[in-house]
Length: 143
Image (cartoon, rainbow, N blue to C red):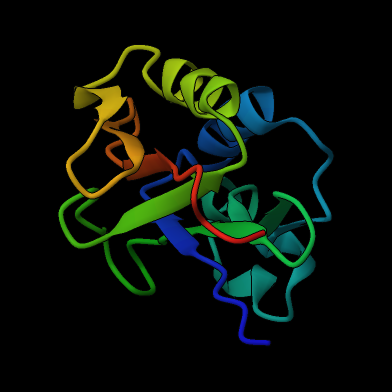
């Protein structure tokens, strides 16, 4: 079975973002690796050495949210939020409401959870880190 795991790039605040996501979804980080742990650490500033090279937060069986700090000296700064959305398919309206409420803290923009014409209970939010989330529950979706 194909599993798609989103990988998020941040401009130096990956740790803050992932602590926020952990507060919403729960669980423990599977991996936390800083640039100082890598083979090229001596080539980086002390500030960049302490940034996150890789972090992974399990979101249930087979799902992993991963991220990194985009170093200006490496890949350059990134523009957040306009090039992707992450979709959460929930098992109940209550779960959808919980995730929507959690991700809506200090939100930039969003749409409320509501019944949509295609049959899903659906809402969206761009969270305080500029990440766009679509949240849905379909009572007719096979398990």
